[in-house]
Figure 1 (cartoon, rainbow, N blue to C red):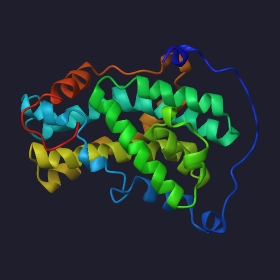
Figure 2: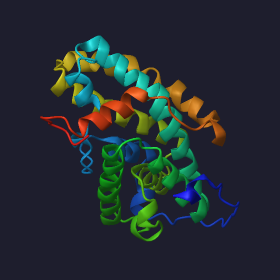
Figure 3: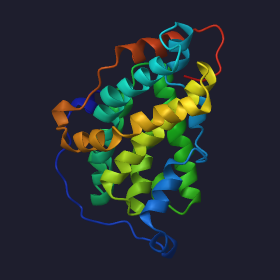
Length: 246
């Protein structure tokens, strides 16, 4: 993975992905809602991203600690790593810049700090790749090397193809992550449905500001500060009983 730390050489191709009649007829907002829906068949529900171990260890045990866990990871991991990389992937798709596309996707994959988190990203990406191809986006299978593919790369492709503005795509990505984490907390803590909605209400209000911050992050500032996530995910690999795959 030595090439990951080498910045790509600037290259502008300036080609644009064609839109089908169906793409043009449907509003970008509705496409975004489809993209972030829990009904999207990519299997995100099967992963807890370390939360299962955090509950097992007693780090998360009620509504407040669940909200703190989800909110801190959203602020210091997803919005500072995934979100700015997603922005760059969106731009790379827009310009058909394959070198940058592969660079940023592979960097994101290399930033996953456990074998489980890497396996999760690859599994979600594979499912998303098949889904988008079946939905009439053949670039999902033909425009990116499998070794470089991540879920964020395919999410960015769908958002760009469906003309979702990049800022809204970032907010949608952050919301989908937070909503999935809340769904995990409902099962594991456990929490009631109303408690889950309170968490989403509070965390959701932070998403526009976090998305705006992600737009301002420079290449050198991309990264995460989530030692608890790394440890929880690694320890989850040998946890005796598990409901989730990460």
